[in-house]
Amino acid sequence: MNSEDQLSFAELGLAAPVLKAIEETGYETPSPIQAASIPHLLEGRDLLGVAQTGTGKTAAFSLPLLSRLDLKSRHTQLLILAPTRELAIQVAEACQTYARNLADFHVLPIYGGQAYDTQLRQLKRGAQVVVGTPGRVMDHMRRGSLKLNNLQALVLDEADEMLRMGFIDDVEWVLEHTPEDRQIALFSATMPAQIKKVAQNHLNNPAEIRIKAKTATATTITQSYLRVSGNQKLDALTRILEMQSFDAMLIFVRTKSATVELSEKLAARGYASEALNGDISQNLRERTVDKLKRGQIDILVATDVVARGLDVERISHVLNYDIPYDTESYIHRIGRTGRAGREGEAILFVSPREQRMLKSIERATRQQIDQMQLPSTNDINEKRVKRFVDRITETIESQDIEFYKNLLTEYQQENDTDPLVVASALAHLLQGKTPLLMKEQPRQPRRDREERGDRGDRGNRRQPRGMSTQAKPLKDNPDVKMQRYKLNVGHEHGVAPKNIVGAIANEADLDANLIGSIEIYDDCSTVDLPTGMPKAVVQQLRKAVVCGQRLNIQDMSSEGKGAPSGGRSRRSGGNNSNSRNRPPRRNRKDSKDSKKSSDS
Ligand code: AMP
Image 1 (cartoon, rainbow, N blue to C red):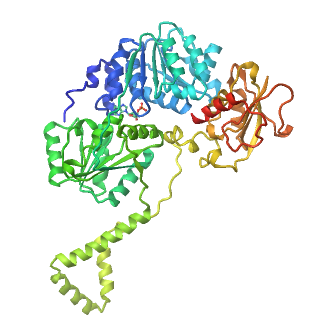
Image 2: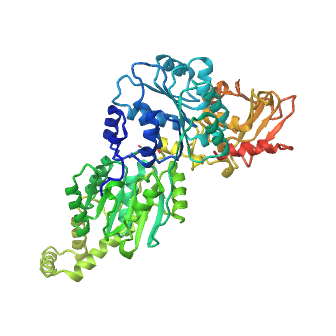
Image 3: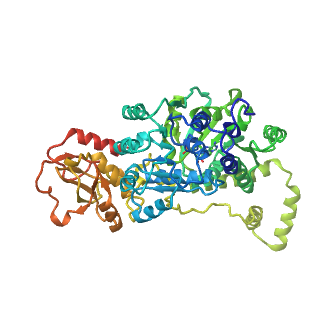
């Protein structure tokens, strides 16, 4: 149950204040990508990491690179490029967390869609770390508002996403306009040829890190997953606990603090539950496991490290409350059930952003994991009623109730009360203040960052501000009315549909699925966008820059929806398979590029 084979954070050589922050955050051990990357990045070596979201890659690059900052200077020393504003903000927040004990530390996210003057002011004040989307970073570099003469390190996060969104030229531009000797870390979930080329051209003898996937899971384990976002996990867990008949359950979370928090919440809901984490002494850990074996507790909430090698036959369920970093951990986790040839059940919570990890797990285990549905209020109530009446039957069958029978007969005769009324009063007494039935809870449509940053659930992502978050993607929603806009960028500026999709998606915070037909002419282009885009969004798009041109987007509805006059038109189906005004002549290259963007 110890982590002798694995380096601890303290052994990796991180700066003391960064180490302290990790301790405060509650991370117990470095994830595989962190253990592999941190030493190289601390040494100043370039790095090529094949890793996806959920593996802990943000900490893998930020912990070592933050450890190396010179905080006496306000010059930008670390630049992180990310494909979307959501990711840029998220990475900036992660940096802020890991740098909480670094005095005079400043991090600045800069992305499309945010007012320039705010960014200019912030850039002027200076930040040692800038996290931004490629287009906006390039823009500030061109304006001279982002100076990178003192840049020490550059991180390309989710490089394949940046490629898919049409930002690769911008990324190359940034790479070419930063000091030669800066260190580069490139992270990508996949390695398409173009990303390999960027790595070959710009990385200097990089350390290559790939988190390998192992296979093989016991066939006696039934696996399923539930789509659930962070804020709904506790509710989902308690519903599952009510519905599933389990003997003992092992719940996996990522941090030490989460083990305690969750087990306390479960205990408050009446479950015999305890936490198991690396802060707990070996002695106490052993006693806790013993309690689980003997049935004194039924739920153990643990981190990966302490659950290593855990062998308790009673564990009928493993619930992955937080998705593991890698497929290997998943296989290890679920192997804690289905012991000694018994049947076991493994449930995985997957937030919208973690779809890719789910796919990797399915590939690694060579098994499709079935989606389970969250038990409804109705299911729960039926179960509660059944349990309640079963208790009555059991008590009648197995307990000596003679004494109470006499007592109640006396009561009934004295008060002349219907026996059913007496029984009902006793049922009420037994249930106490907590109602037996659960009330239907209205589901809060929450737009938290996790959901907005989702790359698997395109329908909920990046709608224009002010539009319903429930809007379906266009391909599922032929009723979305479109409006045609003219853009001030065309063939002569070298634009491709994917550049337009990428810029609009980021600047307008608009789902790529909501971007309709794109047509490119010599000196301008047109794009169909949903009608009723908020004014502020249109204004934002007016200022956006693509291929060095201000888009200067203009609504063409007043001019009629025809083609702009003059010039050769290259047309594309855009991202909208239902798009109206389908052009008579289709340029195949453009359509393909555009499709690529919509897939991003
Ligand atoms: P990322 O892959 O960078 O998106 O990280 C995924 C999640 O894992 C984030 O919520 C991090 O806070 C969390 N995380 C990263 N490293 C660790 C660690 N060593 N221990 C526990 N949680 C971690």
